[in-house]
Image (cartoon, rainbow, N blue to C red; front, side):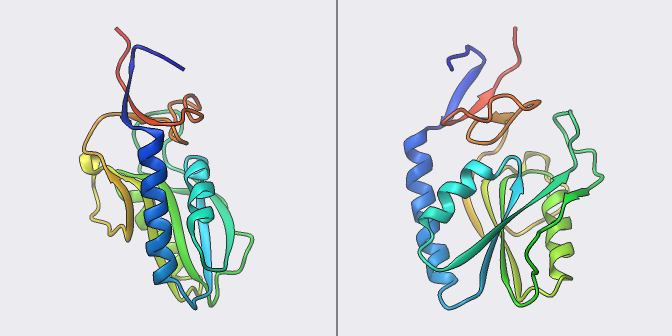
Length: 176
């Protein structure tokens, strides 16, 4: 999809190289542990699919769905867990996989929520750390890319459910 309001920031090749690197690091860190990779839908599904194929240790996977944006482009601040994990977290080492961490509100809520569910540990793997709108300081254990600003789409990231299928991450500039 070629659109004049899209500017590629991270191309498909760079994405795959970085995901392989993350997979190696995560594999080393979780060797011998009871890993549960928990993807945050909908945005993280493409990243998570590639990431779990790059992880070389046994793992289980599950998904959750959370809402804080509605149809807008900025967080409402109210976190709603729309779909909970189907796998018991007790005794698991949970790796939350998120597409983007910006305000920090959602990921901090998820860390707190799942830490209370009996997990051995809860860590975060984010494709993008975008501190432009950071409200809460959060620790991202595994980060794909630091991108300071701009509205990002592609590779799972969307604007009103559009652009998720793009193979690269792009800035979506306002239409003239």
